[in-house]
Amino acid sequence: MPREYLVATFVEPDALVNAVTMIRAHGFKIYDVYAPCPVHGLDEAMGLRRSRLPYVTLCAAVVGMVAAMSFQFYAAVFDWSLNVGGKPDNSTLAFVPITFEIAVLAGGLATAAAFLLRSGLFPGVTATLAAPRVTDDRFAIALRWRTNVFDTGEARRLLHDSGASEVRQIVGDV
Image 1 (cartoon, rainbow, N blue to C red):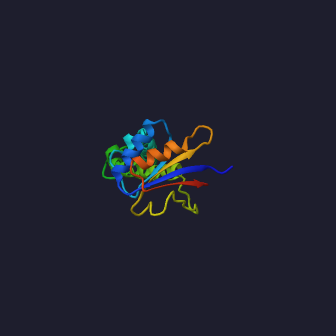
Image 2 (cartoon, rainbow, N blue to C red):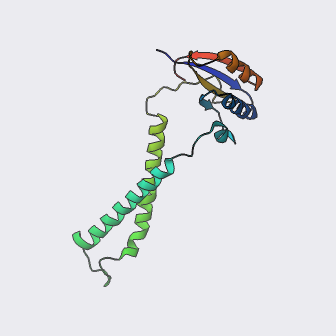
Image 3 (cartoon, rainbow, N blue to C red):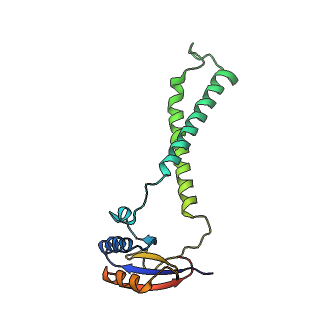
């Protein structure tokens, strides 16, 4: 069964934020908001939680740090111990720069991978736009239309009152 959406486009970002606030105040659930640039205050208006992406970064960086330190210690002490200038085998301070770099690399790669996986941005995925010009100079709100609990007349009126330049129904994926 195809999904139905009510999509409203806006010219100004302030009108978009006002529409999001008004729609949420009247009990409608917003499926998604599309904007060609960052809009200040939109996250708060949508009621979004903070991202959990920093936890992925931290965990991957700690794993990278432990792996780098362990490998260097193993290589310098057990596998290929060399007497270099009378230094001890376990000169941990010499391991710090490489450990830092590997931690940053692991954190960055894991963050990018988690973001792409969570966003569904896989290679070969065809992009679908909610409205024309939404990546250029238009802003859009998509409301998921459920016929048993959705009053389209009220939603359309609220969107037009908040400054929508166009409100239309879309059948399919947004």
